[in-house]
Amino acid sequence: MTTSTEDSASAGRPAVRGATPLPTARVLTIAGTDSGGGAGVPADLKAMMALGTHGMCVVTAVTAQNSIGVQGAWPLPVEAIRGQFRSVVDDIGVDAIKTGMLASAEIVGTVAELLDTVPRREDGSRVPVVVDPVAMSKHGDPLLDPEAAASVRSLLVPRSTVITPNLPEAAMLTGLGAGAPPAILAGALLELGAEWVLIKGGHREGDADDLLVSYTGERHLFRAPREDNTHTHGTGCTMGSLIAAGLGQGLTVPEAVGLAKRFMMGAIPAGYALGAGIGPVDPLWHLRGALGEGGWTPGPGLQVAAG
Ligand SMILES: Nc1ncnc2c1ncn2[C@@H]1O[C@H](COP(=O)(O)OP(=O)(O)O)[C@@H](O)[C@H]1O
Ligand SMILES: Cc1ncc(COP(=O)(O)OP(=O)(O)O)c(N)n1
Image 1 (cartoon, rainbow, N blue to C red):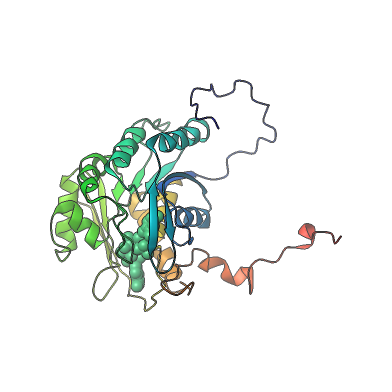
Image 2 (cartoon, helix red, strand yellow; image 1 turned 135 degrees about the vertical axis):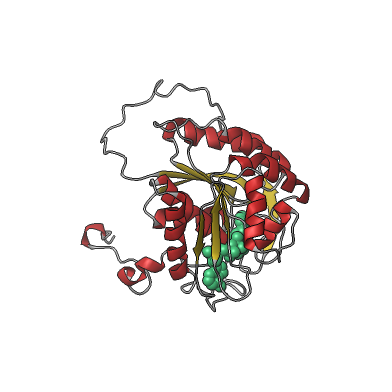
């Protein structure tokens, strides 16, 4: 295995044929895996694909996880994280980035350093970065060392285009209680250097409204009734990835959040039972009618000959 990042772009490569213009945005998640497929990198890639973008991943940690909880977590060496990041950014390029589970202060520091190396866009603006400050799973299993919260606060929040905490994560980062009003939590995060803050409402009593505020004073409330479905594993990861996919396609932050929220309002009621515990939201809810019962059926062109 080689981890070299020094190849020049074309040295010794075969000519690439069939130059179809890039049909879509390139969106990168920097996050942990979920072996059960409901959250983390698998959820991110599915959400990115659901909006028609090309999803890519830098894995930060591997988790053994299912519908009942997280049974184990193994952070990767920072060299592996740097290597994956360089492979993607130096050859393919990125139109938007989302971060999720970062596990340790060392990984948070490495990711902050890597974000600073992303080339600017043609118009000189920064590639948008959605920071989902993942701290624990729905089951209460820790996904971030407690001492890493300070690094997220000082290194990642100021590098974010939009940070998307749930209520407990906003409380952890600000030192305020999770019961503090969303506008107060958002204001404290803006003071830490975020451009936009989305306080997600999944952990609220009653409604599931999300509050989006910007450092310029713009304010948007995305309202939604609480869905009575326990199968909501992966809501935060899916939401953050949809926002990144929207930003990569050129939407503004309020437009991307609005699109993501509307999508979630279909994905959450469609969440399905899987395993003995909390099943996942359905990133394919909008295609189920077209897929038919049991999934997609190959057309005549894809029939495999018998024998
Ligand atoms: N039961 C629910 N009904 C409706 N919307 C929900 C529900 N649970 C979560 N959401 C929405 O899902 C998105 C993700 O939020 P949240 O669940 O708070 O994130 P996280 O997974 O990080 O805790 C938000 O838009 C939130 O309002
Ligand atoms: C590897 C990994 N990353 C993130 C999470 C948290 O995902 P989230 O979308 O917030 O979903 P819940 O865990 O709250 O259902 C995770 N579980 N695993």
